[in-house]
Amino acid sequence: MGRPGIDVPRRLGSAYGVAESRHRLRRLAYLEERLATAFAGWIWATPGFDDKIRLAVLAYESSLAADALHARSGELAPSTAERQWELELADLEGLANSVENASGLGARLSGATALLARLRDAYSEHVAATDDLTDGPTSRILRALAQPTEDRIALCAASARLPESPDTTPPARFLSEAPARDGRFDVAAWDDYRVHEMGATPGEVVRHLLYTNAYGEIEAVEVLGRALADARELPWPMRLDLFRQLWDEARHAEMSWRRMDDLGGAPEPLPQAPPVILGVMAEIADPIERLLVLQRVIEGRVVERHRLRVSTVARDLGDPTTARIYEYIVADERQHVGNSEWIPKIVGDDPERIARLERLQAVCEAKLEEILARRIDRTAGMAR
Image 1: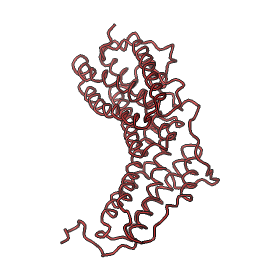
Image 2: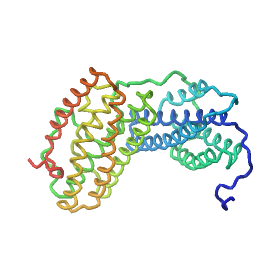
Image 3: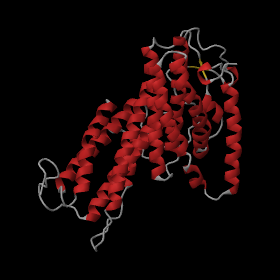
Image 4: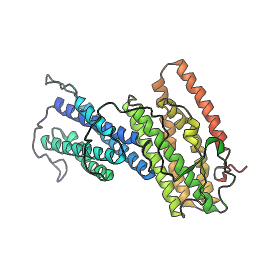
């Protein structure tokens, strides 16, 4: 018996068999995953702070859509002699490559908008061709994706237009240039970073703290974006965790900057921002090694320091609102440290690589402690 407005079948009988429905969903999942990867990879070469955050949000939302489609297509395993659809992706690969290889953020977002519009229409067409009873799970998933897809189109804020001279070659990986920035941070060279005082008043100390935290979080966003673009072969469940971490770091950057604005804006004069993540990583290019440094070395130490800040910022600096922000950041960062459990699964039984990662972790931990000691930070117990 149908429930009014819920799961009421419009008709009985889908236009697609199980194998065809699975094939269609796998193609849609491929496009969503390619979009998520493109959004993440573009962050590195995009200078604007707000644009980096926007791309991280788009990447995460696209990864959620891909995951829902992956999950449903995995359930649709044909059990009869029905025609088995061989997955065909060559046309979609060229299309996705052309969008990802576009030059400039405007052209990239226009191409992404065009792909999102195609996905929106494909979701609608599939829903119209199936029914809400025989293929209820698919219908429910595609209906649930309708509004988030419209939201992503709106967030792109660009006209739908594919590249006029498409470059369909595989996107470049392992970029050698430094990440693009918009100039809002005064980033110190590794050897030059020194902070002897964070501010004369509690308000100045908190604004200094939020300013440098926003920078550290945006560094994490950049590193994760490149890891997702450079290591496309990682297992999908691991990549999904990384997309979530990417979104978390972008939220942390935004909340830190917004709270700083609420308290009067960036400190004057601008304090030095320490190159904590990229400085510690230095010349490391391997995505797994970068993730090891980020998740075990950086995040592990940050959790300890932020836990202290939750109490000191509220009690000693009289700012419970900022303290609450750090409390939520700590909750997220604990999960990020846990994401490093993927690394042994990827490395496997490779004694040489395991030993290299152990040496790398020890070296990077020492480098991190060296630069952290150069800031007198009473909010994290660094009073000397």
